[in-house]
Image (spheres, rainbow, N blue to C red):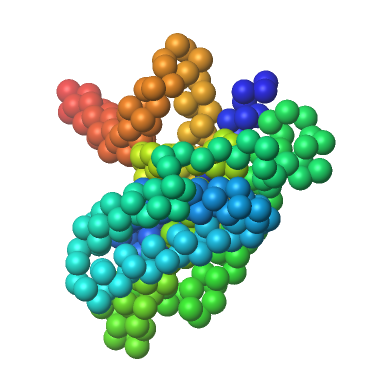
Length: 299
């Protein structure tokens, strides 16, 4: 039972990453590779700030600002520098590696003996593993409500219109480049904050902890869509969180079967690939059923 509760807690915390990528991948329809660098950047900034005596809340906010700065750079390279978004993200992601080393001064930094958000009096009083569940639920609820509110404003509708049809959005007087920059900044701020929270949950920040994060985020989005089907935009935000939890439970089940933790990135890619193929497989199977019925009728 403890492992399941732990997986749910991790799923809630990692869902912040999924929601961040949802803004760019699904709403703006752009593939942002910056998250692979922003996630460890947020972890590095958050952990270093805590080690240097700052409050965990302030440290997490600083991590979000660092992520926002990375998103701003990617956005400027993409919209003003006219560099393809995939390449712009890779450039910032690569640069972030050196920045993270500069911030931490070494490849990893431990939080042993330092206060974190999970070491508050209330969370420490909870049963084992429930601290991450409660923290994750609070953070996810706040972020989801803020996103729902934002997307219903005029600015939010302009943001959605930019992703739906950029030419139409421009004809309506929307500054689409500004919308893209804003989306990348907000998205990467969330990813940076997620990195700081995961680092506090794990008890350390590592220079390589960003490897495979985009796959984890995509898995949350895709699994949520596959499992819950056609949804409204608000429901899709909730589905991303549920998808992240389901993904963590799937990984837990696979590890319980006997796979090594070293295989997690491989397993993540396989799970994501299967989930992405499910709609097409469903259509193919449905078509085969229709054809077979048609053959029987003709016979």
